Image 1 (cartoon, helix red, strand yellow):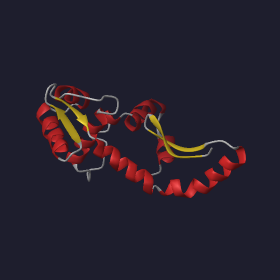
Image 2: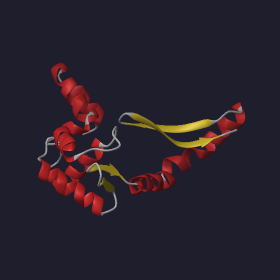
Image 3: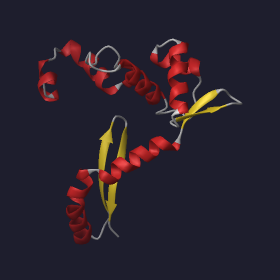
Length: 150
């Protein structure tokens, strides 16, 4: 069902709950399809914890998402072994690795939207002699996809 149709069917009392489920990654659990692989869902929730923090400990992550510490440890240990995370042995806290940035960069390079609007951006940039930015808003941040201009 399209998002707009779902939104229109909500009662006013349900509106805030619905917005929170969309906007807050920590409130997603239990609302996803039964076909979702739970381990990947957990890993994604752990990665979401690093959105505003550079380093986190197991207890902090556990408190943020409500999973027990052993589940958090096993999941973040696996992410670390796959090169997505790093453990600071001195502080025993975890951070994300550059590999995630590389995935995002590759997506950005192959994004068809970027290619589709490049000529429009170039035309606007030339006409107004200014820089033209194509940006997208995802969750809490605006990300520039392409910048063209002077």
